[in-house]
Image (cartoon, one colour):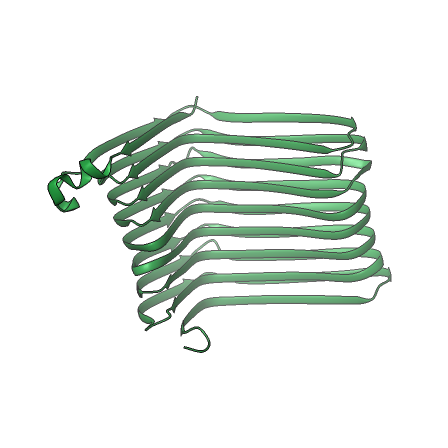
Length: 413
């Protein structure tokens, strides 16, 4: 059974500012969270559809440990430890013999450790630690079987993450240390077969061994130290589709060993990050269509990835990325018989970092970066048109290390 903890701290303005006193004079609340999952956690769902006029919707979620802390106009100090030792799996199956509706929406999500900390009008400090052991596994699986079935619009998303920590700020500030260590095999396996889709069919698989997301708005500020380590044997995202007749087909697969995405709209974003990946990271997107308007397959694999940006203030970014042993591979393939536009795009990167600052006054950024990639990095794209088509477009990009930084000011300023 999954372990879940939710804590919400709410204070009134009078409680925070007694007799005009500053917020800092009020002692913050203390939150201690400890979660260890030893057994397996699994969620399964099967939808058997014959004829549906409106929509088919399915959501399947499995989480080893789940923790949520919120501070609403009341300062808080949070300490959280989460550990998963068993298997976590989410499985969605859909069988269609007729029409599955104008809209088909499927979501499959498997997460080993999930943490969410949110501050509104408060200062929130925290230490967040997440770990998955070598005996653990995290698997997201989704498959649609409708070789003689039809649908209007389709969106099917399959996701898996070993460790996922999110920090949200609104009129708030945070100082946080986040540590993530993943030794579990983390994979997504998505599949879809349809006879006829009159609109857009979007099938996507996304995998991250370790993931940190920070989002700040309305003058927020953040200083975070992140340590991510992925020592698993395999981190993989795979998505396969086949259509008899489809108007627009988009098949995507994205896999990352370690991922950080931090954005802030406020005074300061300070990111100090250390990432190490030794796993084999593979992303594969494969799509086939007999008749198509447009068909594309996109695969993206990265060992270590950081995107950090501040809009309206200052960005400080200090990063070290190390990719070794396993290797990074991305494979994208599209095959069509008769149609218009066919494409395949494959991208593989050992280490990637991007920093940006944008301000309507003076944007400022300070960056310090170290990247070492000591593993093979390969990308392959394949486009095959067996009959007639209007265009065929392929992109294949492999890179050991990539670093991009830019500062911009709105036009007219």
